[in-house]
Length: 341
Image: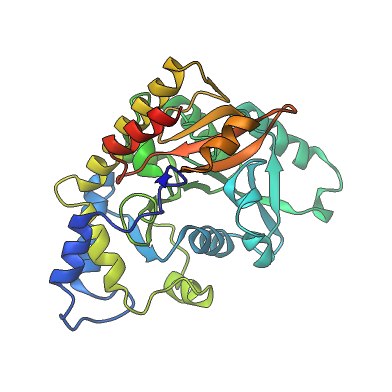
């Protein structure tokens, strides 16, 4: 079978695995208090051009989203997110399980628009009964979005300005951040994100690591005792070295960006291949996820040889199907798929 199912169906980049092997027998302190975690933090701060950033390593994306959101919100607050956002749809109610409501905002191509967010917040405070409602306590976005789309620097700046006006922290989910940063159509850099967001995370699980996410608080705004909060949420790894060593490897000699660039190159070839064969796209994605419209008959035919992700119906006789490239996608994978198309 050829797999284009997702970007975390293979293990880890060989250079990451090699560092885990090389350091395997070293006795080290737990819970992130080891020299490799500290080295990774230093390299991440340098890459973000944010020397005061507070960096924490958590085990996975869902734990990261629910932990950060719960840590930053007060009991009576919820998190504003796009209706199609990951925390809204694909995390089994993890945020709500912490006692905080996800406040869904209309979206366009997976993104929150600044004017829509501004209207939502203005309407909330204009409601004379808002003291009886769940207060918006922060804004959540993902970059790339669930549809592989990206925020421009202007769009992110506009959202950040609204958040500042209402004194709301802006949280960017970067589970696939490496692929967003290396897109050929982006004008956002890692330092831009660090400057505009109050907290974000650098995804490792989907970008070459076995597991792990690096949470970056950018404005000396990490909640007090965040490590303790992380442990309460089951997101603190006792062998924290495993996360630190991986991120230390990913941020050595530009490996993280190299991984992202390779996946984008593969996705662009994938996109071109579908276009040349006359297939239509659900929307234009400049990242590693491509959403293709397939007849249901063709989808069933491909399923015999290809692993991909059914996304949603498209009329009565077709479906939107996601094909994801990753650090481990090869030219041979593309050639095999091309023959089947």
